[in-house]
Length: 184
Image 1 (cartoon, rainbow, N blue to C red):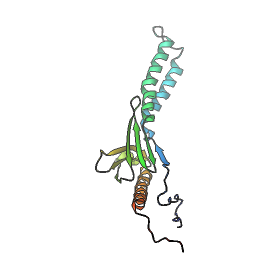
Image 2 (image 1 turned 30 degrees about the vertical axis):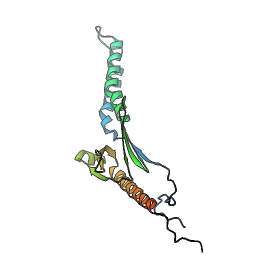
Image 3 (image 1 turned 90 degrees about the vertical axis):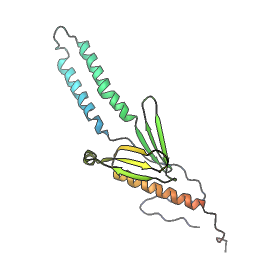
Image 4 (image 1 turned 120 degrees about the vertical axis):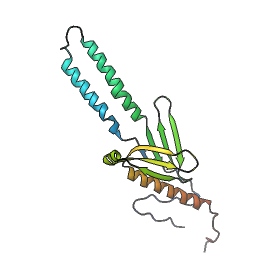
């Protein structure tokens, strides 16, 4: 039996009944536009330290300036960055995994083989930034929301393709082997 041909650089389909390895297609984090204000705060704090260090009036001292700057950077820069960094969405050849949380991690998975609908929602600001929210719903479990995904149209196409390929493979592997392929 010959292997099916592929088009457009897609990987070859595995032989019927052969195990398929789970490969990572993409790992995505929400768009970093939320960190804009944190970046401005970091620049402002650095400028304020440079200007005021050594130039404070007598009731204030330099250690007070550095303490206030460290607190501002921790609360307004480091914590928002850590919250953003703790969210990730992984798309593999078998499932979609959503992880979030700093101290207590939440993880949600949705398998491609069961099939699901993919809704794309984009507000005016998301259209401006090229992002969007994808809602994955299989009709049984709670919908999985992938928020602020960069290049949302490409991710939407990838998810639809993965569902289609996984359902084709599951249907093909569920069929009994045909007996009409006897050697000649």
